[in-house]
Length: 292
Length: 259
Image 1 (cartoon, each protein chain N blue to C red):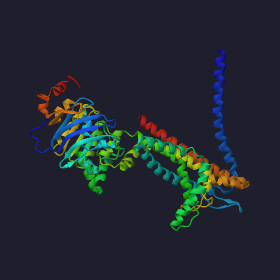
Image 2 (cartoon, rainbow over the protein chains, first blue to last red):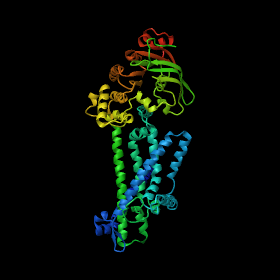
Image 3 (cartoon, chains in turn yellow, red):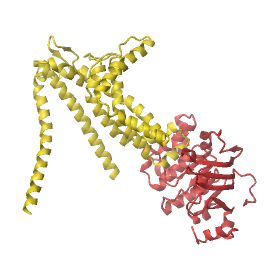
Image 4 (cartoon, rainbow over the protein chains, first blue to last red):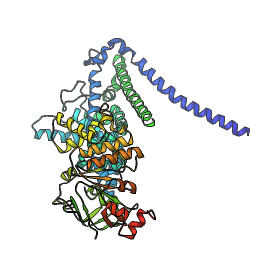
Protein backbone atom coordinates (compact mmCIF):
# COMPACT_ATOMS: atom_id res chain seq x y z
CA UNK A 1 0.00 0.00 0.00
CA UNK A 2 2.60 2.42 1.11
CA UNK A 3 4.72 1.78 -1.95
CA UNK A 4 1.82 2.49 -4.30
CA UNK A 5 0.96 5.69 -2.52
CA UNK A 6 4.57 6.83 -2.66
CA UNK A 7 4.94 6.07 -6.38
CA UNK A 8 1.64 7.76 -7.14
CA UNK A 9 2.60 10.94 -5.36
CA UNK A 10 6.00 10.98 -6.99
CA UNK A 11 4.50 10.47 -10.41
CA UNK A 12 1.99 13.21 -9.83
CA UNK A 13 4.71 15.61 -8.72
CA UNK A 14 6.90 14.81 -11.71
CA UNK A 15 3.98 15.56 -14.00
CA UNK A 16 3.32 18.78 -12.19
CA UNK A 17 6.93 19.89 -12.50
CA UNK A 18 7.08 19.09 -16.21
CA UNK A 19 3.89 20.96 -16.91
CA UNK A 20 5.10 23.83 -14.78
CA UNK A 21 8.40 24.04 -16.66
CA UNK A 22 6.51 24.47 -19.95
CA UNK A 23 4.51 27.35 -18.55
CA UNK A 24 7.53 29.01 -16.99
CA UNK A 25 9.53 28.63 -20.22
CA UNK A 26 6.86 30.42 -22.25
CA UNK A 27 6.68 33.19 -19.70
CA UNK A 28 10.43 33.68 -19.47
CA UNK A 29 10.71 33.62 -23.25
CA UNK A 30 8.34 36.56 -23.34
CA UNK A 31 10.16 38.38 -20.59
CA UNK A 32 13.57 37.82 -22.14
CA UNK A 33 12.39 39.02 -25.54
CA UNK A 34 10.89 42.07 -23.88
CA UNK A 35 14.00 42.92 -21.90
CA UNK A 36 16.41 42.22 -24.76
CA UNK A 37 14.38 44.49 -27.02
CA UNK A 38 14.18 47.24 -24.39
CA UNK A 39 16.90 49.34 -25.98
CA UNK A 40 15.08 49.35 -29.33
CA UNK A 41 11.78 50.43 -27.79
CA UNK A 42 13.56 53.15 -25.76
CA UNK A 43 15.36 54.51 -28.80
CA UNK A 44 12.50 54.49 -31.31
CA UNK A 45 9.36 54.32 -29.15
CA UNK A 46 6.09 53.32 -30.81
CA UNK A 47 7.39 54.93 -33.99
CA UNK A 48 9.38 51.74 -34.46
CA UNK A 49 6.18 50.01 -35.55
CA UNK A 50 5.42 52.49 -38.35
CA UNK A 51 8.86 53.53 -39.51
CA UNK A 52 10.07 52.20 -42.85
CA UNK A 53 13.70 53.16 -42.46
CA UNK A 54 16.39 50.52 -42.08
CA UNK A 55 19.94 51.78 -42.08
CA UNK A 56 22.62 49.85 -40.17
CA UNK A 57 25.19 52.57 -40.92
CA UNK A 58 23.33 55.34 -39.12
CA UNK A 59 21.68 52.83 -36.78
CA UNK A 60 18.10 53.80 -37.62
CA UNK A 61 15.57 50.96 -37.79
CA UNK A 62 11.86 50.59 -38.45
CA UNK A 63 9.70 47.46 -38.31
CA UNK A 64 7.01 48.34 -40.84
CA UNK A 65 8.54 46.73 -43.98
CA UNK A 66 9.01 43.42 -42.19
CA UNK A 67 5.53 43.53 -40.64
CA UNK A 68 3.86 44.42 -43.94
CA UNK A 69 5.92 41.80 -45.75
CA UNK A 70 4.87 39.15 -43.26
CA UNK A 71 1.19 40.06 -43.50
CA UNK A 72 1.27 40.28 -47.29
CA UNK A 73 3.03 36.96 -47.88
CA UNK A 74 0.83 35.23 -45.32
CA UNK A 75 -2.39 36.74 -46.63
CA UNK A 76 -1.59 36.04 -50.25
CA UNK A 77 -0.43 32.52 -49.45
CA UNK A 78 -3.66 31.89 -47.59
CA UNK A 79 -5.72 33.11 -50.53
CA UNK A 80 -3.82 30.93 -53.02
CA UNK A 81 -3.88 27.90 -50.72
CA UNK A 82 -7.61 28.24 -50.05
CA UNK A 83 -8.48 28.38 -53.73
CA UNK A 84 -6.18 25.49 -54.56
CA UNK A 85 -7.31 23.40 -51.59
CA UNK A 86 -10.95 23.90 -52.55
CA UNK A 87 -10.42 22.58 -56.06
CA UNK A 88 -8.22 19.71 -54.82
CA UNK A 89 -10.70 18.71 -52.12
CA UNK A 90 -13.59 18.75 -54.59
CA UNK A 91 -11.65 16.46 -56.87
CA UNK A 92 -10.68 14.13 -54.02
CA UNK A 93 -14.26 13.81 -52.82
CA UNK A 94 -15.72 13.33 -56.29
CA UNK A 95 -13.07 11.11 -57.87
CA UNK A 96 -13.35 7.32 -58.03
CA UNK A 97 -12.03 5.73 -54.81
CA UNK A 98 -8.57 4.72 -56.09
CA UNK A 99 -7.73 8.08 -57.64
CA UNK A 100 -9.17 9.81 -54.60
CA UNK A 101 -6.80 7.90 -52.31
CA UNK A 102 -3.74 8.59 -54.44
CA UNK A 103 -4.51 12.31 -54.58
CA UNK A 104 -5.19 12.37 -50.89
CA UNK A 105 -1.87 10.76 -49.98
CA UNK A 106 -0.04 12.97 -52.44
CA UNK A 107 -1.30 16.13 -50.84
CA UNK A 108 -0.68 14.81 -47.33
CA UNK A 109 2.93 14.09 -48.34
CA UNK A 110 3.41 17.79 -49.07
CA UNK A 111 3.24 18.32 -45.32
CA UNK A 112 6.20 16.01 -44.75
CA UNK A 113 8.63 17.91 -46.98
CA UNK A 114 11.16 19.88 -44.88
CA UNK A 115 10.93 23.59 -45.44
CA UNK A 116 14.54 23.92 -46.54
CA UNK A 117 13.70 21.67 -49.49
CA UNK A 118 10.84 23.98 -50.42
CA UNK A 119 13.33 26.83 -50.22
CA UNK A 120 15.83 25.10 -52.52
CA UNK A 121 13.10 24.20 -54.95
CA UNK A 122 11.95 27.81 -54.94
CA UNK A 123 15.46 29.12 -55.47
CA UNK A 124 16.48 26.80 -58.27
CA UNK A 125 13.20 26.06 -60.01
CA UNK A 126 10.30 28.31 -59.10
CA UNK A 127 12.07 31.66 -59.30
CA UNK A 128 13.77 30.98 -62.68
CA UNK A 129 10.43 29.68 -63.92
CA UNK A 130 8.67 32.87 -62.82
CA UNK A 131 11.41 34.91 -64.42
CA UNK A 132 10.91 33.17 -67.75
CA UNK A 133 7.14 33.26 -67.55
CA UNK A 134 7.10 37.00 -66.95
CA UNK A 135 9.80 37.52 -69.52
CA UNK A 136 7.37 36.12 -72.10
CA UNK A 137 4.93 38.80 -70.98
CA UNK A 138 7.74 41.30 -71.43
CA UNK A 139 7.93 42.03 -67.74
CA UNK A 140 11.42 42.23 -66.35
CA UNK A 141 11.91 40.46 -63.03
CA UNK A 142 14.37 38.09 -61.43
CA UNK A 143 11.51 36.04 -59.99
CA UNK A 144 12.38 36.66 -56.36
CA UNK A 145 9.92 38.53 -54.22
CA UNK A 146 6.44 38.69 -52.80
CA UNK A 147 4.82 36.39 -55.38
CA UNK A 148 7.45 33.63 -55.14
CA UNK A 149 7.36 33.67 -51.33
CA UNK A 150 3.56 33.53 -51.29
CA UNK A 151 3.48 30.65 -53.76
CA UNK A 152 5.92 28.61 -51.69
CA UNK A 153 4.04 29.34 -48.49
CA UNK A 154 0.78 28.44 -50.18
CA UNK A 155 2.19 25.07 -51.17
CA UNK A 156 3.36 24.49 -47.60
CA UNK A 157 0.02 25.19 -45.96
CA UNK A 158 -2.01 23.55 -48.71
CA UNK A 159 -2.06 20.07 -47.11
CA UNK A 160 -3.45 21.39 -43.82
CA UNK A 161 -6.23 23.39 -45.41
CA UNK A 162 -6.95 20.70 -47.98
CA UNK A 163 -7.34 18.06 -45.27
CA UNK A 164 -9.90 20.14 -43.42
CA UNK A 165 -11.70 21.05 -46.61
CA UNK A 166 -11.85 17.41 -47.68
CA UNK A 167 -13.46 16.47 -44.36
CA UNK A 168 -15.91 19.33 -44.63
CA UNK A 169 -17.02 18.26 -48.09
CA UNK A 170 -17.21 14.61 -47.09
CA UNK A 171 -19.27 15.21 -43.99
CA UNK A 172 -21.97 17.30 -45.60
CA UNK A 173 -25.28 15.44 -45.34
CA UNK A 174 -26.18 13.78 -48.65
CA UNK A 175 -29.69 15.25 -48.43
CA UNK A 176 -28.36 18.79 -48.37
CA UNK A 177 -26.31 18.10 -51.46
CA UNK A 178 -29.29 16.53 -53.19
CA UNK A 179 -31.48 19.46 -52.21
CA UNK A 180 -28.98 21.87 -53.72
CA UNK A 181 -28.71 19.89 -56.93
CA UNK A 182 -32.47 19.47 -56.97
CA UNK A 183 -32.86 23.24 -56.78
CA UNK A 184 -30.84 23.51 -59.97
CA UNK A 185 -27.25 23.95 -58.78
CA UNK A 186 -24.34 22.76 -60.83
CA UNK A 187 -21.73 20.78 -58.89
CA UNK A 188 -19.60 23.92 -58.68
CA UNK A 189 -22.45 26.12 -57.43
CA UNK A 190 -23.44 23.48 -54.90
CA UNK A 191 -19.89 23.27 -53.54
CA UNK A 192 -19.32 27.02 -53.48
CA UNK A 193 -22.66 28.23 -52.14
CA UNK A 194 -23.93 25.36 -50.03
CA UNK A 195 -21.18 22.98 -48.94
CA UNK A 196 -18.59 25.65 -48.14
CA UNK A 197 -21.03 27.70 -46.11
CA UNK A 198 -22.21 24.60 -44.36
CA UNK A 199 -18.67 23.82 -43.22
CA UNK A 200 -17.46 27.39 -42.77
CA UNK A 201 -16.72 26.93 -39.08
CA UNK A 202 -14.62 23.80 -39.46
CA UNK A 203 -12.88 25.44 -42.37
CA UNK A 204 -11.84 28.41 -40.29
CA UNK A 205 -10.06 26.02 -37.92
CA UNK A 206 -7.94 24.79 -40.83
CA UNK A 207 -7.28 28.35 -41.90
CA UNK A 208 -5.92 29.20 -38.45
CA UNK A 209 -3.55 26.25 -38.51
CA UNK A 210 -2.29 27.29 -41.93
CA UNK A 211 -2.00 30.90 -40.82
CA UNK A 212 0.14 29.96 -37.84
CA UNK A 213 2.49 27.99 -40.02
CA UNK A 214 2.79 30.64 -42.74
CA UNK A 215 3.39 33.47 -40.30
CA UNK A 216 6.58 32.08 -38.81
CA UNK A 217 7.96 30.13 -41.76
CA UNK A 218 11.60 31.15 -42.19
CA UNK A 219 13.78 28.92 -44.31
CA UNK A 220 11.64 28.53 -47.41
CA UNK A 221 10.78 32.22 -47.49
CA UNK A 222 14.35 33.31 -46.92
CA UNK A 223 15.44 31.65 -50.16
CA UNK A 224 12.95 33.34 -52.45
CA UNK A 225 11.65 36.53 -50.90
CA UNK A 226 14.49 38.74 -52.14
CA UNK A 227 15.36 40.08 -48.67
CA UNK A 228 14.91 43.73 -49.46
CA UNK A 229 13.85 45.65 -46.39
CA UNK A 230 11.23 47.75 -48.14
CA UNK A 231 7.49 47.67 -48.55
CA UNK A 232 6.98 45.98 -51.94
CA UNK A 233 5.32 48.06 -54.64
CA UNK A 234 4.16 45.07 -56.65
CA UNK A 235 3.89 41.28 -56.57
CA UNK A 236 7.23 40.92 -58.30
CA UNK A 237 9.27 43.18 -56.05
CA UNK A 238 11.59 41.82 -53.42
CA UNK A 239 10.57 42.28 -49.81
CA UNK A 240 11.17 40.62 -46.47
CA UNK A 241 9.31 39.06 -43.57
CA UNK A 242 10.01 39.28 -39.88
CA UNK A 243 11.31 35.72 -39.76
CA UNK A 244 13.54 36.23 -42.81
CA UNK A 245 14.91 39.49 -41.43
CA UNK A 246 15.84 37.80 -38.18
CA UNK A 247 17.58 34.88 -39.87
CA UNK A 248 19.43 37.19 -42.24
CA UNK A 249 20.77 39.67 -39.72
CA UNK A 250 21.39 37.90 -36.45
CA UNK A 251 24.85 36.58 -37.30
CA UNK A 252 26.51 39.99 -37.48
CA UNK A 253 24.21 42.06 -35.32
CA UNK A 254 25.19 43.61 -32.05
CA UNK A 255 24.20 46.49 -29.83
CA UNK A 256 21.14 48.40 -30.97
CA UNK A 257 20.61 46.27 -34.05
CA UNK A 258 20.48 43.12 -31.97
CA UNK A 259 17.91 44.72 -29.72
CA UNK A 260 15.91 45.70 -32.79
CA UNK A 261 15.90 42.10 -33.96
CA UNK A 262 14.65 41.00 -30.56
CA UNK A 263 11.88 43.58 -30.85
CA UNK A 264 10.90 42.14 -34.23
CA UNK A 265 10.88 38.69 -32.63
CA UNK A 266 8.56 39.95 -29.93
CA UNK A 267 6.22 41.38 -32.54
CA UNK A 268 6.12 38.07 -34.42
CA UNK A 269 5.48 36.16 -31.23
CA UNK A 270 2.63 38.50 -30.32
CA UNK A 271 1.12 38.12 -33.80
CA UNK A 272 1.25 34.34 -33.54
CA UNK A 273 -0.21 34.44 -30.03
CA UNK A 274 -2.93 36.80 -31.22
CA UNK A 275 -3.99 34.33 -33.88
CA UNK A 276 -3.92 31.48 -31.37
CA UNK A 277 -6.11 33.38 -28.95
CA UNK A 278 -8.48 34.45 -31.71
CA UNK A 279 -8.81 30.88 -32.91
CA UNK A 280 -9.35 29.65 -29.38
CA UNK A 281 -12.07 32.20 -28.63
CA UNK A 282 -13.73 31.52 -31.94
CA UNK A 283 -13.76 27.76 -31.50
CA UNK A 284 -15.08 28.10 -27.97
CA UNK A 285 -17.84 30.39 -29.12
CA UNK A 286 -18.95 28.04 -31.88
CA UNK A 287 -18.72 25.06 -29.51
CA UNK A 288 -21.09 26.85 -27.13
CA UNK A 289 -23.47 27.62 -29.97
CA UNK A 290 -23.54 24.00 -31.04
CA UNK A 291 -24.20 22.86 -27.49
CA UNK A 292 -27.19 25.20 -27.12
CA UNK B 1 -51.45 -3.38 -66.27
CA UNK B 2 -53.38 -0.97 -64.13
CA UNK B 3 -54.46 2.26 -65.68
CA UNK B 4 -56.79 4.88 -64.40
CA UNK B 5 -59.68 5.28 -66.79
CA UNK B 6 -60.25 9.01 -66.81
CA UNK B 7 -56.59 9.67 -67.51
CA UNK B 8 -56.87 11.59 -70.74
CA UNK B 9 -53.60 13.45 -70.84
CA UNK B 10 -51.18 12.53 -68.05
CA UNK B 11 -48.48 15.02 -67.01
CA UNK B 12 -45.91 12.27 -66.60
CA UNK B 13 -45.91 8.91 -68.34
CA UNK B 14 -43.56 6.27 -66.93
CA UNK B 15 -42.95 3.37 -69.28
CA UNK B 16 -41.01 0.22 -68.53
CA UNK B 17 -38.83 1.89 -65.88
CA UNK B 18 -36.18 -0.28 -64.25
CA UNK B 19 -33.53 0.91 -61.83
CA UNK B 20 -30.17 -0.49 -60.75
CA UNK B 21 -27.87 0.44 -57.88
CA UNK B 22 -24.09 0.45 -58.01
CA UNK B 23 -23.69 -3.18 -56.98
CA UNK B 24 -26.02 -4.29 -59.77
CA UNK B 25 -28.94 -4.72 -57.41
CA UNK B 26 -32.17 -4.10 -59.30
CA UNK B 27 -34.57 -1.92 -57.30
CA UNK B 28 -37.36 -1.27 -59.83
CA UNK B 29 -38.87 -3.70 -62.32
CA UNK B 30 -40.62 -2.43 -65.46
CA UNK B 31 -42.70 0.26 -63.75
CA UNK B 32 -45.55 1.77 -65.76
CA UNK B 33 -47.36 4.73 -64.25
CA UNK B 34 -49.37 7.74 -65.38
CA UNK B 35 -49.27 10.88 -63.25
CA UNK B 36 -52.39 13.01 -63.55
CA UNK B 37 -52.01 16.76 -63.97
CA UNK B 38 -53.15 19.03 -61.10
CA UNK B 39 -53.76 16.09 -58.81
CA UNK B 40 -51.95 14.50 -55.91
CA UNK B 41 -50.59 11.05 -56.61
CA UNK B 42 -49.61 9.07 -53.53
CA UNK B 43 -46.96 6.38 -53.77
CA UNK B 44 -47.33 3.85 -50.94
CA UNK B 45 -45.79 0.56 -49.98
CA UNK B 46 -43.62 -1.09 -47.32
CA UNK B 47 -40.05 0.08 -46.59
CA UNK B 48 -37.52 -0.77 -49.24
CA UNK B 49 -40.10 -1.39 -51.94
CA UNK B 50 -38.63 1.24 -54.26
CA UNK B 51 -41.06 4.14 -53.70
CA UNK B 52 -38.34 6.73 -53.15
CA UNK B 53 -36.13 5.23 -55.83
CA UNK B 54 -39.00 5.58 -58.29
CA UNK B 55 -39.63 9.20 -57.32
CA UNK B 56 -35.96 10.08 -57.54
CA UNK B 57 -35.89 9.26 -61.26
CA UNK B 58 -38.37 12.05 -62.09
CA UNK B 59 -35.75 14.78 -61.62
CA UNK B 60 -32.78 12.48 -62.15
CA UNK B 61 -31.37 13.35 -58.75
CA UNK B 62 -30.08 9.78 -58.52
CA UNK B 63 -27.48 10.66 -61.17
CA UNK B 64 -25.52 12.40 -58.41
CA UNK B 65 -24.47 9.00 -57.18
CA UNK B 66 -21.86 6.96 -58.93
CA UNK B 67 -23.10 3.79 -60.57
CA UNK B 68 -26.86 4.31 -60.21
CA UNK B 69 -28.71 3.79 -63.46
CA UNK B 70 -32.27 3.94 -64.77
CA UNK B 71 -33.65 2.24 -67.88
CA UNK B 72 -36.92 2.86 -69.67
CA UNK B 73 -38.73 6.08 -70.43
CA UNK B 74 -40.26 8.84 -68.37
CA UNK B 75 -42.18 11.33 -70.46
CA UNK B 76 -42.75 14.80 -69.07
CA UNK B 77 -45.11 16.30 -71.63
CA UNK B 78 -43.15 15.53 -74.79
CA UNK B 79 -39.70 15.16 -73.25
CA UNK B 80 -38.04 11.94 -72.15
CA UNK B 81 -36.50 12.75 -68.78
CA UNK B 82 -34.12 9.80 -68.97
CA UNK B 83 -32.68 10.77 -72.36
CA UNK B 84 -28.98 11.67 -71.98
CA UNK B 85 -29.46 14.99 -73.78
CA UNK B 86 -32.09 16.22 -71.33
CA UNK B 87 -31.07 19.58 -69.83
CA UNK B 88 -30.88 18.87 -66.10
CA UNK B 89 -31.05 22.52 -65.10
CA UNK B 90 -34.27 23.00 -67.03
CA UNK B 91 -35.63 19.67 -65.78
CA UNK B 92 -35.05 20.65 -62.17
CA UNK B 93 -36.72 23.98 -62.74
CA UNK B 94 -39.79 22.12 -64.02
CA UNK B 95 -39.68 19.39 -61.37
CA UNK B 96 -39.06 20.54 -57.79
CA UNK B 97 -38.28 18.19 -54.91
CA UNK B 98 -38.83 18.10 -51.15
CA UNK B 99 -37.05 15.53 -48.98
CA UNK B 100 -37.66 13.29 -45.93
CA UNK B 101 -35.98 15.76 -43.64
CA UNK B 102 -36.03 19.53 -44.05
CA UNK B 103 -32.98 20.73 -45.97
CA UNK B 104 -32.66 24.48 -45.40
CA UNK B 105 -29.51 25.89 -46.96
CA UNK B 106 -26.97 27.52 -44.62
CA UNK B 107 -28.25 31.03 -45.32
CA UNK B 108 -31.03 33.37 -44.22
CA UNK B 109 -34.73 32.59 -44.66
CA UNK B 110 -34.93 35.12 -47.47
CA UNK B 111 -31.80 33.87 -49.21
CA UNK B 112 -33.02 30.28 -49.01
CA UNK B 113 -35.97 31.15 -51.23
CA UNK B 114 -34.14 33.69 -53.37
CA UNK B 115 -31.26 31.35 -54.13
CA UNK B 116 -32.97 29.14 -56.75
CA UNK B 117 -34.40 32.23 -58.43
CA UNK B 118 -30.89 33.52 -58.92
CA UNK B 119 -29.80 30.15 -60.30
CA UNK B 120 -32.51 30.09 -62.93
CA UNK B 121 -33.40 33.68 -63.78
CA UNK B 122 -31.90 37.09 -64.15
CA UNK B 123 -34.06 39.32 -61.97
CA UNK B 124 -33.68 42.66 -60.28
CA UNK B 125 -33.89 43.02 -56.51
CA UNK B 126 -37.50 44.16 -56.54
CA UNK B 127 -38.67 41.16 -58.55
CA UNK B 128 -36.71 38.75 -56.37
CA UNK B 129 -38.20 40.22 -53.20
CA UNK B 130 -41.72 40.01 -54.65
CA UNK B 131 -41.33 36.43 -55.77
CA UNK B 132 -39.82 35.40 -52.42
CA UNK B 133 -42.69 36.98 -50.50
CA UNK B 134 -45.26 35.33 -52.78
CA UNK B 135 -43.62 31.91 -52.41
CA UNK B 136 -43.50 32.26 -48.63
CA UNK B 137 -47.18 33.26 -48.62
CA UNK B 138 -48.05 30.31 -50.83
CA UNK B 139 -46.20 28.04 -48.43
CA UNK B 140 -48.20 29.51 -45.47
CA UNK B 141 -44.99 30.66 -43.86
CA UNK B 142 -44.93 34.42 -44.52
CA UNK B 143 -46.81 35.49 -41.41
CA UNK B 144 -44.42 33.52 -39.21
CA UNK B 145 -41.14 34.72 -40.71
CA UNK B 146 -41.83 38.14 -42.22
CA UNK B 147 -40.03 39.91 -39.35
CA UNK B 148 -37.09 37.52 -39.23
CA UNK B 149 -36.29 37.11 -42.91
CA UNK B 150 -32.62 37.71 -42.26
CA UNK B 151 -32.21 35.08 -39.58
CA UNK B 152 -30.76 31.72 -40.48
CA UNK B 153 -33.19 29.34 -42.17
CA UNK B 154 -31.70 26.56 -40.05
CA UNK B 155 -32.95 28.23 -36.86
CA UNK B 156 -36.63 27.64 -37.73
CA UNK B 157 -38.64 24.77 -36.26
CA UNK B 158 -38.82 21.49 -38.17
CA UNK B 159 -42.27 22.16 -39.60
CA UNK B 160 -41.33 25.71 -40.57
CA UNK B 161 -38.14 24.45 -42.19
CA UNK B 162 -40.10 22.01 -44.31
CA UNK B 163 -42.51 24.75 -45.41
CA UNK B 164 -39.46 26.88 -46.19
CA UNK B 165 -38.26 24.08 -48.43
CA UNK B 166 -41.65 23.99 -50.13
CA UNK B 167 -41.45 27.76 -50.66
CA UNK B 168 -37.98 27.26 -52.11
CA UNK B 169 -39.27 24.57 -54.43
CA UNK B 170 -42.28 26.54 -55.72
CA UNK B 171 -40.59 29.92 -56.11
CA UNK B 172 -39.29 28.98 -59.56
CA UNK B 173 -42.84 28.00 -60.63
CA UNK B 174 -42.18 24.34 -61.41
CA UNK B 175 -44.85 22.16 -63.01
CA UNK B 176 -44.33 19.10 -60.85
CA UNK B 177 -43.59 18.83 -57.14
CA UNK B 178 -41.99 15.65 -55.81
CA UNK B 179 -42.28 15.01 -52.09
CA UNK B 180 -40.32 12.15 -50.56
CA UNK B 181 -41.97 11.39 -47.20
CA UNK B 182 -42.08 15.12 -46.43
CA UNK B 183 -43.69 14.78 -43.01
CA UNK B 184 -41.83 11.79 -41.62
CA UNK B 185 -39.61 13.98 -39.42
CA UNK B 186 -42.34 16.40 -38.36
CA UNK B 187 -44.90 16.50 -35.54
CA UNK B 188 -48.62 15.83 -36.24
CA UNK B 189 -49.81 19.45 -36.07
CA UNK B 190 -47.13 20.63 -38.48
CA UNK B 191 -47.96 17.62 -40.67
CA UNK B 192 -51.61 18.69 -40.98
CA UNK B 193 -50.47 22.19 -41.96
CA UNK B 194 -48.36 20.77 -44.74
CA UNK B 195 -51.20 18.52 -45.93
CA UNK B 196 -53.54 21.54 -46.14
CA UNK B 197 -50.87 23.36 -48.03
CA UNK B 198 -50.49 20.52 -50.53
CA UNK B 199 -54.26 20.42 -51.13
CA UNK B 200 -54.14 24.11 -52.02
CA UNK B 201 -51.03 23.76 -54.15
CA UNK B 202 -52.44 21.03 -56.37
CA UNK B 203 -54.48 23.68 -58.20
CA UNK B 204 -51.19 24.97 -59.56
CA UNK B 205 -48.85 22.01 -59.53
CA UNK B 206 -48.85 18.32 -60.28
CA UNK B 207 -47.89 16.63 -57.03
CA UNK B 208 -46.37 13.22 -56.41
CA UNK B 209 -45.88 12.25 -52.78
CA UNK B 210 -44.18 9.19 -51.36
CA UNK B 211 -45.62 8.40 -47.97
CA UNK B 212 -45.33 5.80 -45.29
CA UNK B 213 -48.48 7.02 -43.73
CA UNK B 214 -51.55 5.42 -45.28
CA UNK B 215 -53.97 7.80 -43.57
CA UNK B 216 -52.05 10.62 -45.18
CA UNK B 217 -52.38 9.04 -48.60
CA UNK B 218 -56.10 8.52 -48.02
CA UNK B 219 -56.58 12.07 -46.75
CA UNK B 220 -54.90 14.06 -49.48
CA UNK B 221 -54.32 12.04 -52.64
CA UNK B 222 -56.50 11.61 -55.72
CA UNK B 223 -54.62 8.68 -57.16
CA UNK B 224 -52.68 6.01 -55.30
CA UNK B 225 -49.97 3.69 -56.57
CA UNK B 226 -49.04 0.68 -54.45
CA UNK B 227 -45.45 -0.54 -54.73
CA UNK B 228 -44.16 -3.90 -53.61
CA UNK B 229 -40.62 -5.19 -54.09
CA UNK B 230 -39.92 -2.82 -56.96
CA UNK B 231 -43.13 -3.62 -58.84
CA UNK B 232 -46.19 -1.43 -59.14
CA UNK B 233 -48.87 -3.78 -57.91
CA UNK B 234 -51.90 -1.54 -58.26
CA UNK B 235 -52.77 1.96 -59.37
CA UNK B 236 -56.17 3.58 -59.11
CA UNK B 237 -58.38 6.28 -57.69
CA UNK B 238 -57.39 6.59 -54.03
CA UNK B 239 -60.93 5.85 -52.86
CA UNK B 240 -61.07 2.68 -54.91
CA UNK B 241 -57.61 1.48 -53.85
CA UNK B 242 -58.42 1.94 -50.19
CA UNK B 243 -61.97 0.57 -50.25
CA UNK B 244 -62.03 -2.07 -52.97
CA UNK B 245 -58.45 -2.98 -53.88
CA UNK B 246 -58.20 -5.27 -56.86
CA UNK B 247 -55.05 -7.07 -55.81
CA UNK B 248 -54.70 -9.28 -52.77
CA UNK B 249 -51.28 -7.77 -51.81
CA UNK B 250 -52.76 -4.28 -51.82
CA UNK B 251 -55.57 -5.36 -49.57
CA UNK B 252 -53.18 -7.04 -47.15
CA UNK B 253 -50.98 -3.97 -47.00
CA UNK B 254 -53.71 -1.40 -46.44
CA UNK B 255 -55.43 -3.53 -43.85
CA UNK B 256 -52.14 -3.66 -42.00
CA UNK B 257 -51.37 -7.33 -42.40
CA UNK B 258 -47.77 -6.52 -43.42
CA UNK B 259 -45.48 -3.55 -44.10
